[in-house]
Image (cartoon, rainbow over all chains, first blue to last red):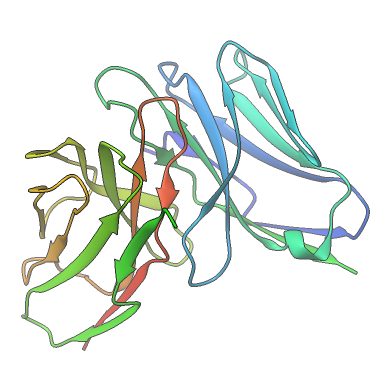
Length: 114
Length: 112
């Protein structure tokens, strides 16, 4: 059973517009969430994170929103650029049994068209 | 330059052979992880180690083995018991619970 779900396998956006990538989770023990960006044949690189005590975290063009009651988080990229085209993975971790290991979603492939 | 290094980048092996993937980090991180990525799948955890000489199974540990004799190194052995070993393998390290994991560039293993 998937604990972290990214229900959109792909997303296409025009350059300059907003990209919104969504992620849902089922485990209420998750208390730390991260977004990673991945290019083909490379390791993922960390993008932005948010702790469950916050509902928003912003870093330049990237903002992550967390809705704990809905068990939902989203990544907003504004404005989108062609270089943002990549696969974006949502990840979550919980203290306790899993010792902070990251559980990943399946990823959303973002294509930003010039 | 601090980082995490996986080698080799590409690896080919015959079916039935064991193969070991290397992962080294000089970030002084305590925790290290191995993930596997298959097309259309997220990253799935194979094994993790929070401290030297200790490691735990992840979600898909069957057919794999690891060791953590040194803080810097966390090699993964793909054994002949792994039914579908062809995949992209990613090693990661982190400095604690609420910190991001840093990933290596990955090893693509193809078993023929």
